[in-house]
Image (cartoon, rainbow, N blue to C red; front, top):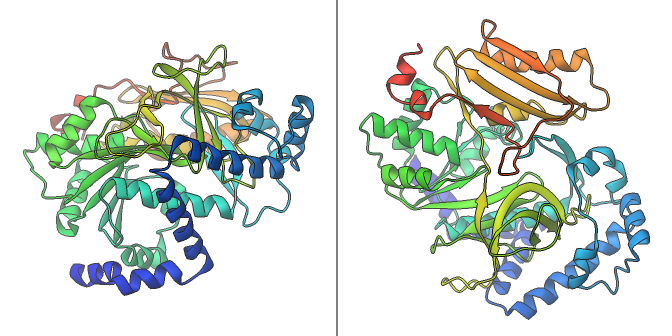
Length: 464
């Protein structure tokens, strides 16, 4: 059945039909070709392209109440706006999105839909995207996969856990969709000993070409396999890591166990996969046809390069809720130095301090920290949160209240947490005025104080 599935997904005739069967697919193909052409364009050509796209976006943004106020107060004329003028615009922050959500919307956006993020800074927000963004996101994902050696119809194992993604593959229609895409999905919200063994067995049978995973989840699986003395025969091509920081020791562990290269990727729910590694592994290429990425001094807001700065991103393809100079909450190092691969796009040499922890529960299950951040998706009553595992059976939830915060909100959150940690574990709920950042300037929204050694091998068995 696997070979038949490969034939269906890799058949050139079928791929041609898929790329032309609908306006949506044709738009993705056109966008993809446009992106590829710009990769080897000169810096001047790329800048001119970005400036045209930016002017178009600003003209639409001027119809949103919030941006009309901003443009009027800053004397912005979208028709004459230059790329060099971007620094004159104020930054967009999560607080602004929380407080002015409806005022940020462009009236009449085509195919507008809501999306949510727990955010790497622990500030949950609701935002809006549109048809143009979906098309651009699909094209960017396709190109990012190609940089990691993926090809159309490749067998993909997804070690993931976002509820938005899981809902798309539930039921018969979802399972059929996965089969037609030659993809398998493995839920990272429960990665205890038995579950990791089951995932390993399933992937040995499926033999994926590519694994796409949370960085900490594939690292945890690699540690488990090494502790068990298992040398996996998959994936056949590469591993893509995303959603959190990939530390050097994690890359070394994963590549050592699986025997294939790891390609890191950077993005979020708000801005998709805006940067990805190529075969040179010397940083992540920013997808400049869709994004203008700045690194700034967190205090002064002035641009910095070749040193750590806060990342601000302008999304050129969201015509539902424009993200102009959005402070995403991460730190990175930007370079304009040309990559040996020949791609002329700017690169993020490194993403500094971006991580989610895994949580070992008293019954032996291991839950990815993203589970707890997803409890806050769409929760405008919460301005900021932090969930901490103090010990095996003791947890702390810190919540900074927002408009509409109530005892019912607390009860709903506690119920969601209790579904995972159980009724006997200790759960303390604190309501501070603010949650301090770490010394690196990041806010860690999930923290496990258990050593990673306790999550693998005998550490798991000892808790059962």
